[in-house]
Length: 427
Image 1 (cartoon, rainbow, N blue to C red):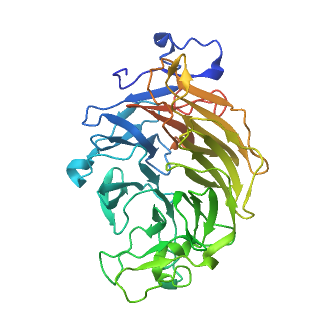
Image 2 (cartoon, one colour; image 1 turned 90 degrees about the vertical axis):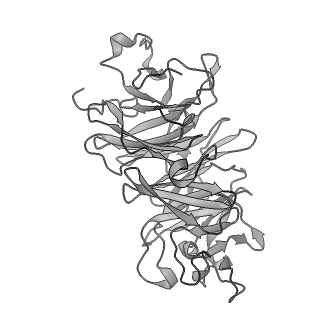
Image 3 (cartoon, helix red, strand yellow; image 1 turned 60 degrees about the vertical axis):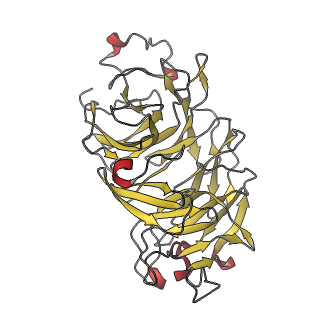
């Protein structure tokens, strides 16, 4: 891996005859900034990325997670395209005792603020949410969760049926149970209300979570993609666990375990059988008020990109199926939606280095199988894992693509088709 903080080594295939190996000639014209792993204890940097600011009128920020040792960094991109590591690195092992992370840790961005949240296991049977703004993360224990299988920010209905919605915060899935994150129950401080998800009597093992605010609603409902391949929309009161008796009643009222079991009436509409069994790390990305972009991958390396109308619970006809899919993000500008999809093991120039494809999306047909962009490194390395995580971040009041690889992060200030005008100031 090239040990440079700023390199010009990423390419855009649609550029045709442009000779991207002549870096000196292109120093003022390069569209890509690449930041290599900083000098810290992490040996696997860039396992997860997300935007660091909800709006960035003057530059932008990217949150980056490294593991072995576990590190949180933010990269600040100035309005002219130069970059620096912010001074807010957090060493998660020293501060919180988190020495290692999952292969695809969950890094969320709050849709209503600059807050980010890392959801991870912190011990043999403990899940912790590290949440904060500008790298100032603080830990919140999720009591009773053994694994961190999926999570999403949501604005939940009021506690105990109250009319005031709760602020946006993560809901966590552990196998077939969901936990509203920052709940301080009055019953016992270490016995968190939770809800076991069932379809009839069958447990619903969660593989991905999403949040949707359907038309006329004031709070979010929960979208669940299960290990059986079914997609569910569930009443958002599930966030409150057994505290919401109409949605998740406690079958053993009075015992010390505050675990409710999902009521059949809490499932909204008819579940959709997608006939695709997703693995952990799959995603539900909600857009357009009632549509979900599904990124799924299987144990056998299969991949699926599909769009579902959550009002009708119907899958739109056009989908993309290709092996090697591992990550996706939505690029939305002016009512036009594209999906940015990462394939980190794809072969480029004879080596398994990875690529990113950008597909058009619409709410009538689904996903156009012909990508408008193909992104990869111009000097691919075997095992580079380009595309193992992707994000779309605000930058100079626009939306740009970020791509993570093995100990390297790329940001695209311009692309050939998606946003052909340079987003940097003074260029």
